[in-house]
Length: 373
Image (cartoon, rainbow, N blue to C red; front, side, top):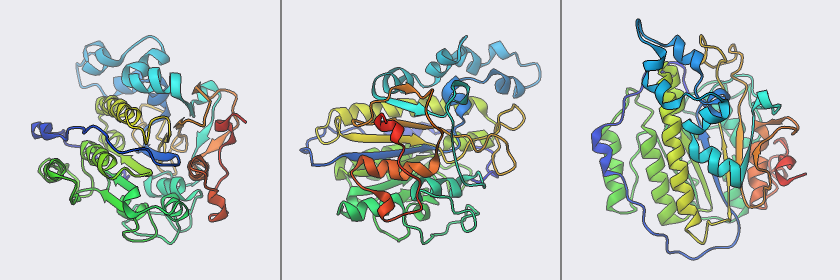
């Protein structure tokens, strides 16, 4: 998102009104489901290595001792593997160990990254969703709709899905424009936006987002994005769901490294909650492809870790995690060919039996490595 955002307000105590998860009752439907998740600007360093002690050290206040900080006590361990498991325990010990794989750890020999040259949010999300970079046209984070069809548009049309069966929920309001080349093509709820219908619990949650505002008019707390998306999953039972979380980027721009780690840990708990729900439901259990990635990376050093853009080295380095019934890979990719963000859309479409490049011929090819080839 915009690099001008410098601070994010914490959630207020009133967020205790959160929506309770309802027991799923619907019967399974034919065909795979897709859940695409993005964590805005989450660096490879934290995903693969957990706490970066040099970044934490550089942000210490005068007379503050590294070993006495809450972040050090909570997240420090002797190895990268142990540190990352402290930050995201479910992701590493369950998802990546037993159900999926992840690309992008350059220390381990895996390279994954964006192809656009801008290295900020809208161009990154457009590349994820359309399968190609549009550098000459998409060069700002403005609230603007472009003519390019997205993965969500194509899947809705090719799978003959209803408006409710494709849905996108984002913390940043600009996803109202990013996700489709048409207005109101499917359910989109992003930024400070009321959620219509879906019961009194959802309405209470929808109202609460306006009572726990952040310093930005265009960005709400991730908690509301996740809870509203989960509510829609439970009630509308979409085949395709896009969940776009943003606090990893917001806290980084505010140079609150401790909050970046806390956000990743909280997001990991949501991953566990989501997976538990999916695996308890016959429509989604062992029938859902999940892809998790980021729109851009960030700087590599304690001086530029919170920054991104075309002048920041490292902001082109990203990662991709894949969990799905048709993907046999487990753990980290080590001897895989290089892969790129422009391949995500075709990979996601293929997981649902759709050849994206029949409609978007310039999109990157599906990542064959995921299918064990």
